Length: 205
Image 1 (cartoon, helix red, strand yellow):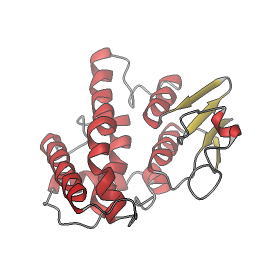
Image 2 (tube, helix red, strand yellow):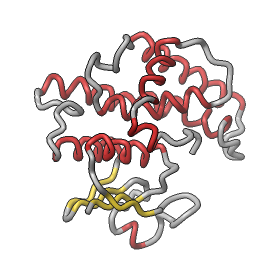
Image 3 (cartoon, one colour):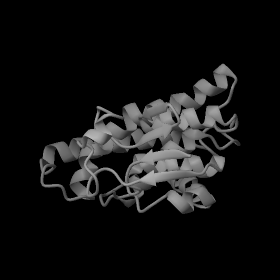
């Protein structure tokens, strides 16, 4: 059986659990990370020296990085709706996954820690303002690309799973936001999926 190491409140663990649910995979999840078992433990470091959750153990295969894990699971189990075989269609999905990890996430990190987690290490007003401004810019870009379906049109893909948690985090973090009606409608569509309802979480962990 698959092993997934990481606390279920983590946004990155939740996207892996969501992917498993969409595919219909059984797994055993083990609590690791903040507030439970430390990722500095030698048992964990033997699997992931970067000290980050989640980690997937699938027989002899050991993977970290949540987006990589989601791609692996979809490809292994032939879910070409979630991750197409056609190189151009697959690249379109992976473009959004890479944008989420490389552009959207770094934009919100400081503001989220300051405003949602009330982190004492994130109290610089200038850095909060810069993070909020960057977050607004990235979300406006997403808003401009959304239509009436999923991020790539009529087919739900891994791109929607990795973006779903980020959009939820945007909606729940308390600050003055511009209206993004397409993003809000998109999130409502995501919320209706059973896998989201099982693993969406509260978005503030």
